[in-house]
Length: 110
Image (cartoon, rainbow, N blue to C red; front, side, top):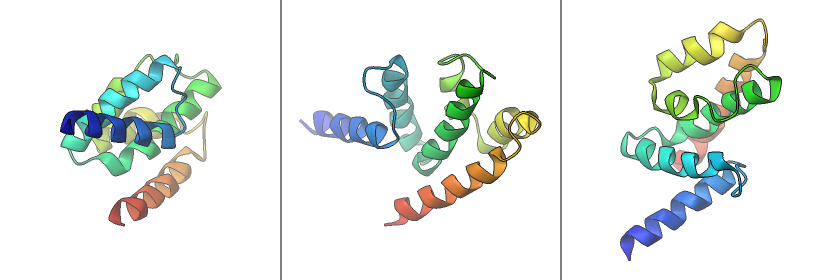
C-alpha cells in the first residue's frame, strides 16, 4: 500500500515537470526520479530536464538517447557535458539552468 502511494507521488511529480504521460520518456523519468530521490537530488531534476528538453528540441541530441545518464551523473559532469560544451549552440542555457535550479530549490524547501 505504501509503495503504491509513493509511486503515485512520483507519477504526479513527473507530470508537474511537463513530461507527457504517453511519451516513452515518462516511464524513464519516473524511474530516474525514484533513483534521484534516494540520492537527494530531487530539486535538480526539473532544471536538468529543461536542459535535456532544449537539446532535444534543437536536435543536439536524440530524444531519449541519454536521458538516464544525464539525470544520474553528478552536477559537475552534467554542467560540463550538457551545458558548457553546448554554449555556442545554446548561449543562454547556463542562465536558464541556474534560474530553474533556484526555483526548484525554493519549491523543495517548502
